[in-house]
Length: 139
Image 1 (tube, rainbow, N blue to C red):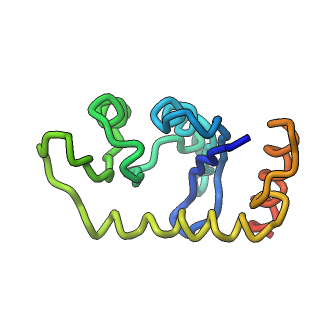
Image 2 (tube, rainbow, N blue to C red):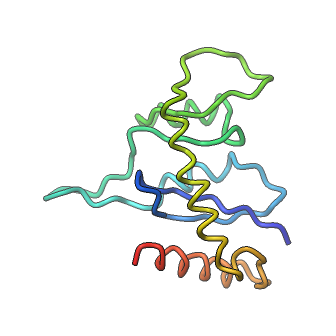
């Protein structure tokens, strides 16, 4: 019954899109699906923006394939390396400190009892409650 919530948030800490996976699954497969969702409207005219300048994630998203996929899309990864990975490239600690906005967002979402305890058996119903909670944060 465990579920992982993967969120994409904007710079102010408000949710853009959310994705659910099973609790035993790794975070890696959710990254491309999370980046393909949630376009941001540009000021003025033009297509919506899908690619952020940088993506900050925790060590669960750390792998060479994830970094390569992000760089191929033109996105700078701000993900710390695991202890068993090679240390090549710089790591921007100041940008990584901004990741706490996502953690605070998850805490605000879990203030809703139905999201924190997951009473719903179906993924569709739980995702609907997550979407409603995200909408309430925008209002």
